[in-house]
Length: 102
Figure 1 (cartoon, helix red, strand yellow):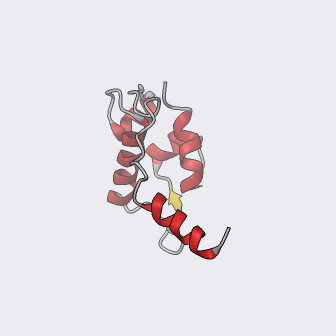
Figure 2 (spheres, rainbow, N blue to C red):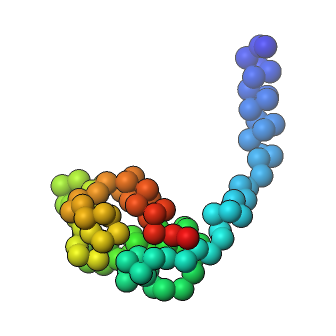
């Protein structure tokens, strides 16, 4: 393939990409456990909304480590969700949330 053909191909595909649709399985409302309900509320919520409410709580209560923003410093409510851990990475948080959604 020549350079001009490669450039032409990229131009053709750049404008035709469709917007991604959300996965319907991720948008299914899930019931939070009693521990998680103390933070996000007791009504069923889709997983992305649960994560958003968790971040609202974390930022509202200033529970991010100032030196490492990826680290969450758990208060009593969050420790119940995080299995008693006092610090959890933002990547670990989703693993712990999955155990509290049904």
